[in-house]
Length: 482
Image 1 (cartoon, helix red, strand yellow):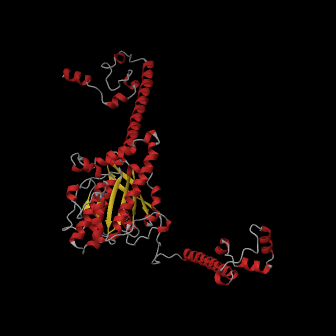
Image 2 (cartoon, helix red, strand yellow):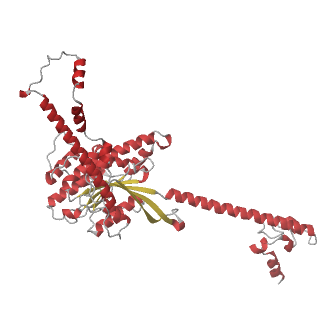
Image 3 (cartoon, rainbow, N blue to C red):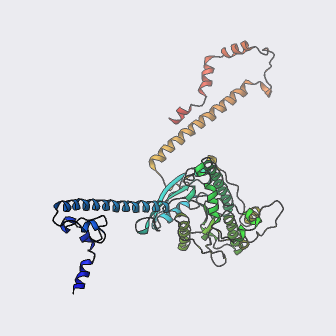
């Protein structure tokens, strides 16, 4: 019984008892307040039970200990919060998606199906540059509360086809190049225009990347950014990928460093084509995509699975979701092909079905094969002269805008008519001044270099003739625009 009581007295008090002021316990409390007096605090054991000063000093010391502990706990909480914020900032991204391609290919429709798949109304044509954004809930460690959060993607579309290709400079900058994805949309219902469209936009993207790289290399802190992006692009291919090992294959591969995706839209237009045409179409697009380090996906708004495939490919590149490993290349079984970046090989693509020559590159051979089946189309040009009409069917009329435009067009027509009339009258006046037979008036009547005679001749004209000639001049631009 005595042993049990001794053991009970020697047992350490609970944390609540250790946190109480020492004045109530009758002794001082050390900084190691979780240990009982007498074990971790010899001074506390020798405190006089009847000394009032000892209890007061012990209470002050206990309060100081509590305050220090609260400060330490606050520091620990702030450390956790700062660390969590840093991990979240490192994990979160603001990606950029840029849709380019031929006019009427369906860029606006694809963007709407990706950002708002439940919206039913058709989007309006994009006359120039359009911007929107989308958020996606992600589950990633450090990306937000409870390991998740919303990440933002900035969506850009360049309308007008190649005419406004210089607008690519707006979304593709040195600040967005690290997390940008360029989607080149081609229209499979107009196959003859597909190859020129791909060739134009691939070169336009490379030209802009060269400008961005020049800007990055001018600053020491960002001098190696493009080199790092190219290394990142190589990692999409496996270490044993055959096209990254051989010297000839490496020369054919031209990785840009950014995410590229070729979207062959309106693929349902290819359903009734000859199998050989489908084969050449698919392999040509695969060759262009593979050698540029891009992905390839066939889409159609009439096929839900193809839109799901597009969404998976975009989510992988924009929000770093799980890589898409599905590869669909059998054109005899499937209409909608899908090849993720780095999943294809030159051996699987095969050789173009044309006779090679010494001067032709592999890309030239595939171009000839493609044009042999689908015809040719002139190369695309960049500039306002190539800008087509925005709304040829007058589907999206605005009364006030249309009236103002009609007024300006009428004023321009009046100006052109006035200018043409003045030119015609001037030509008639010149022909009447010449002698019959078309011969020029003899110059012997006026000595060469006699400016005075010329001046007097012009001043001797009646004022009515001068007024008549002045009235035939075209009206100024201000009058035409009134």
